[in-house]
Amino acid sequence: MTKLKLGPIADDKPVKVMVELPAALHRDLAEYGRILADGATPIEPAKLIVPMLERFVATDRGFAKARRSTG
Image 1 (spheres, one colour):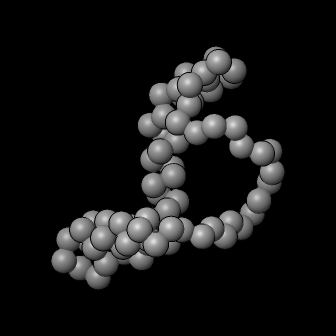
Image 2 (tube, rainbow, N blue to C red):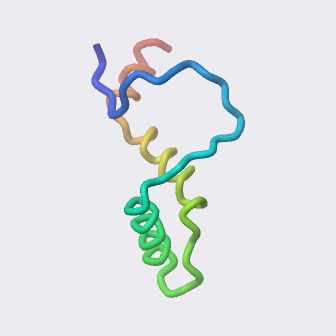
C-alpha cells in the first residue's frame, strides 16, 4: 500500500467546507500570515488554508507516485 501523508478519507463531494481549528493552529496561521505579509497587512488565516492544502497535495510524493501508477 502507498504511504501518504493522510489516511483514508470518506468519498464525499462537498462544495463548501466549514472547519473548526484548534486555537493554537489558528494562532500559528495568523502568525504565518503576518510573516508572509512582510510588513504589509497580515493575510487572514482563512485565506492561507487552500494554498497550504494545495501545496501539501502537490508535494506529497506518495500521492504523486500513486497518481502516476493509477493514471
